[in-house]
Image (cartoon, rainbow over all chains, first blue to last red):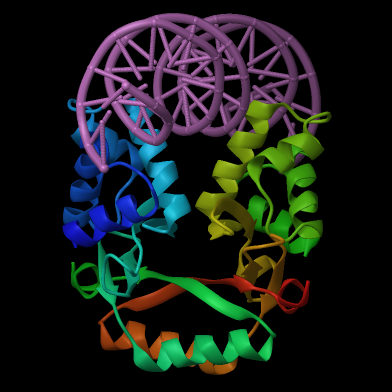
Length: 136
Length: 136
DNA sequence: CTCCCTGCAAAACCTTTGCAATGGA
DNA sequence: TCCATTGCAAAGGTTTTGCAGGGAG
């Protein structure tokens, strides 16, 4: 994925730089994170301003997208750089787990089509109480 | 709905005040809005700080919830105070339209159940290009 | 009559921007 | 070399907090 990412930048006439690689690698290791977590982790080696600029750029290029999970605004790599999935978030312990579901996907296609939309992407977030917390 | 809202507050031992009513009524009239829009509209009659406190309170009480639509973080009344629905957002013109779908809902239940989650709520956002913009 | 809430003002955060220096291609 | 990109510093927004006065129950 790292190579694809670098190619993607160069193909868009952009440069592969330290802050960009830094942020991308952090996102690869951390599905569903926050901007402040990125700053917290990469902040030593890259300036806050560069991190914001990088995140803005990644959004424009479709490398990442925003999600609301557990009520918080978060970011994650988009489908081209991570396998397509959604989240189940536990309202009690805050943990999120990934889910994939074929049937669901085809329903979303059907809905978009019925409404005359050419679908580009979608996001789903299911909130509830996880098995573990139901026992506890 | 307005009565239900007032009852909800009083039942929780909270007071029905001008800023709270103000914000609630604005949300009733504006599905899918932003905090700054609320401030922009209610700002004359309620202090920013009270608006933030009210929104925080509404979130805790489950009166509203957050959504990402068209890449922006937004708020809207939750199911108990508005009919359950999701959004189709156009990436070109930015407009959002509401969608309801039975099949989709039952799929989400199935997924939650399969993962041992007791589902509380879910959010879906489909992004694409609307019929109008496809022609334009 | 009580305290829960509000408004105000200030603090704390978060995000963006301008500009000179730096380093990829 | 050349220009995109960075770091720094400062500005611009947004959200939170402390406190005294005011209003709902």
